[in-house]
Amino acid sequence: MILTINCGSSSLKYQLYTPDLGEVAAKGIISRIGEAGTSIDHRVGGRKIRQDLPGADHAGALEAVISNLLHPEWGAIGDIAEIEAIGHRAVHGGDTFVQSVLVTDEVIAQLEECTPLAPLHNPVNLVGIREARRLLPDVPHVVVFDTSFHQGMPPHAHVFALPYRYYAEHKIRRYGFHGTSCRYVSARAAEILGRPIEDLRMVICHLGNGVTIDAVSGGRSVDTSIGFGTFSGVMMGTRSGDFDPGLIFYMHKKLGMSLGDIEAICYKESGLLGVSGVSNDMREVVEQAVAGNARCALAIDMFVYMVRKFVGSYAAAMDGIDALVFTAGIGENSAYIRSRISHGLEFLGVELDAVANDQVNGTAAIISPAQARAATMVVPTDEEKMIALDTLRLSGGLTGRDPAEVYLAAAVAE
Image 1 (tube, rainbow, N blue to C red):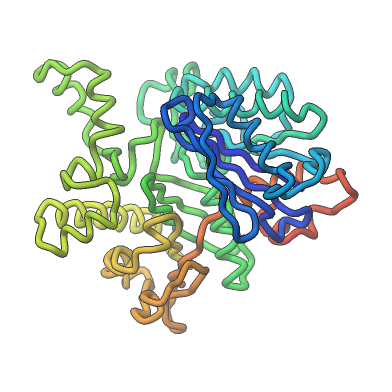
Image 2: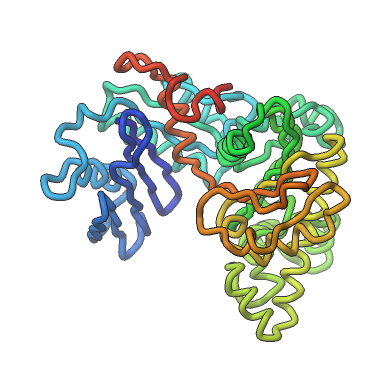
């Protein structure tokens, strides 16, 4: 079996896959790590078990994961040796890691060097890797990077128009995020369409609390909306999206704000929350907009407008599009937002079947009429499956299985 671990600053998500990756044998999340009220929600079969883990740190959280997987009543394995490999998510691999890799001491050292690029994420990702290696030292560990899918972007898309030395000496460039999701979704979209991914130009709209718009041509990311930090591009739940960087100087010099204060505003107080004044959750913003809240209506207008601008620019960059693909929390669940974004993109060949759009029920669906020049689709993301696939691919000799025979492995192989 393959275990995937997504270790965040205050949470840890995990999933245990059967050897063929066909089923999730168990999964769960540990919340509020290092805070009051730490708890684990463990699911196996149709059963959910909730436990309090008072005072647990990340090491204690991982120990709780293994304990629950081995539990005689609600466990999924009888022996820890049934875990054949572990896949880890890491947010930032810089330009060092252009693909997923087996974890070694050298890899950990290189990942530490990338910490300044993602100071909120990489340190806790490293904690998860180290603790898992401590608990299961004899199995292969694989690390999958959010940034790696975007490392094939051409220089004209990832180099900023700053003095070149900052790129050459300090790795200041466009990196992009949500790459694990975009890679999985683009491969699934090609599979659903029954067309070789090499022949497709897609715009992936990963719309959630975090937002990435990704131009995928021939199965490769050629441009993406988030740049160096994680607040640029389209406005998000609490992140600002693009704005004139001159505002930072103005807020610092004229308003007397510290750089730390400005950074907090850009990351934590902006986006849907900042404009609406109500919530960072699109569902609540839509509900309030329908009830007549003008600022919530404005927030939705801004969000839709920014997404549509990126779709149009990426269509221009790829000389057209063959598919517009919605994914993640908003993209998968909001027929209203999908409709708002699609409206007006008919010049790109985008059309929406209103009935099909309204009937999306959590599964992949084509929501455009058959005659549309570009397919409009909803494809649920599954970052954990992508991590598991890469883990299987890189540790494929475990039981003589051929990773190419595993579901979707051929479609997502690099």
